[in-house]
Image (cartoon, rainbow, N blue to C red):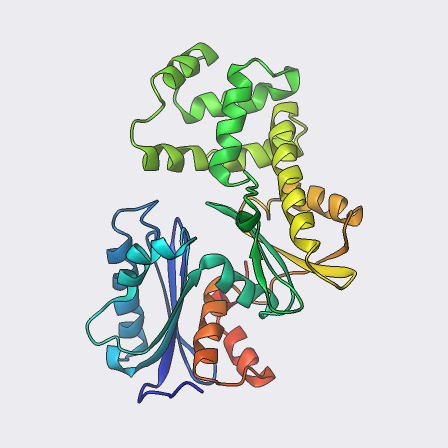
Length: 330
């Protein structure tokens, strides 16, 4: 059993490629503060360490707690995929006075903790990044990455794919409005100008280029609903790759039905939700039950922090946690 320190609160961190979300809770699941800041991943933002530590400091300030009152911390970080990543992950929470139980995991783990309360099932994350993560009946954690499968469904991949299809001429009259919106986004007058921009590498800085492409994704998921063939081709390709990943991971479950939760701006767009629901009804390896996530990833991190202290996660604690609007999945 972990020994509780003299602390009175826990910290949960959902460290994504766009935002860092920090939540401070007491031992009964009552949320005392919530703070958002910039990205937690050094692959997305060189200021990741500053972003995380600034968010922790601000969250403690709002909770009216000192840093030595933290009994446990659990953080899920995008890009933490192997032991070598600890070189940049561990320093994210190395702060003077923050001496407590610390758990560092991939952000999919805290998302699963929140969505499915660490019960068997699969989560599909597709937004800034993309990962499919499962915990089977034996408690084994499996990522599609572990099988070297990647569902290229993150926002930037949709936009890159659509741009390449456009430049390759794979378009028809149904795509006219989408093409116009894409050109307006880049402040260009023609597809020929877009081709020249592509030849020049779009934007030299990789992080900025990926960020700008990611911002195009909502245009594509919306256009798919409006029957743009280009948008549907790109989105359907991503949906197919997600389903391959889900079916792969589901094969490691013993029960005939597997719960699946969807997390992230792309996979929760109306078009993706509709298409995934259709495909899951015709699943190959299992029956799939699409379930709404119980809690947000940052609340899932709080639950993991509480578990480090061997605090039972009962109905009253969960009810307390649910009182805060940022604990609920949106």
